[in-house]
Structures are given as structure tokens and as C-alpha cells.
Length: 288
Figure 1 (tube, rainbow, N blue to C red):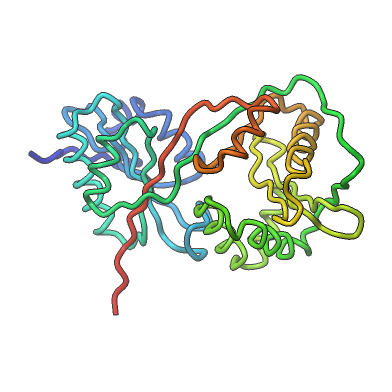
Figure 2 (figure 1 turned 180 degrees about the vertical axis):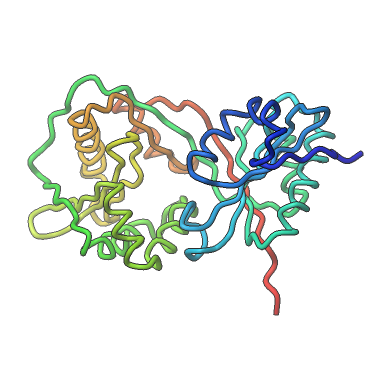
């Protein structure tokens, strides 16, 4: 049985359907992203949202991609299978080069049904939060040098180097495509995020970046030769202090599930794991 109702984001007769998935449709509209809602009897089951890179930094700039979202958490396995198949067929009829789907790791049935269609796991991480109440004391053993826009490429190359043996393949992939962005995108990126070199004397031993408006800490990487010296902890505390200076009271970061040392460090500081999320990706087969 097919889900026959598909409503476009700009359909004036679909507002009563779209409002039921406002938590997904609202952000998509705010970003100017087109979307389609799949439903039965005007009750939403899921959505497909389209965007262009560098929205996810998982492909070259300009690449059309899509998000497939299961809107109803109470769907039966059979309905998930049905929706996943129809949504992917919908994506395949467009020029989108890949599709993403993310689920709490406990939703094994949904994950299995998407994997059966050719989706592969590209990330498995804890989303962690920290309530910032007071500043930390920072050691003067290391220094934090703000990165100018002309040094963003140097920052990215160092981050890639420091993450060489990391479990976090998604972050490594993101850095790879970030380094290939046109100069104007990198300049815009440097206005959104704050970037710092972590220095010990004349040597850069780590890198750090965060968003001072959203409170999300994006990357804290330390040179493997300098790990175990407390530099990652100091860098995290520095980021939290800078967020507090910007009147941000809640910090967010993601930690790969295999990176047990980082998770323990974050918990030591006071971060709490809120959810564990698996991200799956379908890629359009390359044509010869």
C-alpha cells in the first residue's frame, strides 16, 4: 500500500498538514529549504527536505542533497519501511546526490529498514549539554590565539592532521570538504564561528572552534603528541568561558560513541549526554 498524499511546502491547501510537523517545517522554511510532507488522511508520516552544500559539508559546494525525516515516532515497522521506500524513490527522481536520515540509536527497527535500502551509518554520537553558570580558571601553560579569516585554511589543515586517527569519520569528512570551499564561503564561515589556535609557546598544539550565538562547540582537537597533558580540558573550559562572556548559558557538543576518553572528560567537566544519535547516508551510485 502506497502513501498517496504528498504535500508541497508551497501548497496553500496543505497548511493544516504542515502545522502538524512545525518542529521540522519551521526550521526548513527559516532556511529557505523546500520540503514535501508524506501523509495518510492528512496525518503526516514523514518529510523530505532539500538543500545545497555547504549546508552539511559532506559533498562539494553546490551539491543538491536531502534529509529524510520520520515525523511520527509511533509508526509501525511496516509503515516505516513503506515511507522509507517512497521517500527514497522521491529523492531518486531529483538531482540529489545523497540523502541523510538520523535516529535515536534505540530506534533499531527504523535504522534497519533504512539500511535495507542502501543507507550506511556515517555517525554514531552522543549529543551532550552543559549549563554554564560560572567561569572556569584557565591555566596559563597554554595560550589561545584567535584565527583571522586569512588563516582559516591553516586551521582546517591542522584540524585534519590532529584528527587523523580519530573515530569521528563524519567530522573528518566535513573538514575535507570545508577545505575545498571557495574563499567567499570560508570568509562567511569565519564570521559565524570563532576559531582559535591552542598554542604552547611558539608551537600550535591544538585547535578549537565554537559558535558564540548557538552555544555549540564544534571542534576541539589536540596534536596526538601532546595529548594527556590536560590541553583538551583547558580548551573546553576556555570555550565555555567565551560562551558565558557572550551571555550563552547552555553549551552543546557531540562526541563519537567510540571516543570514550572524550566522553569521560566532558562528563568530568559537567556535560550531560542527552541523546545518542545515529546518522545514515544514502549516496547516488556514480555513473561511468
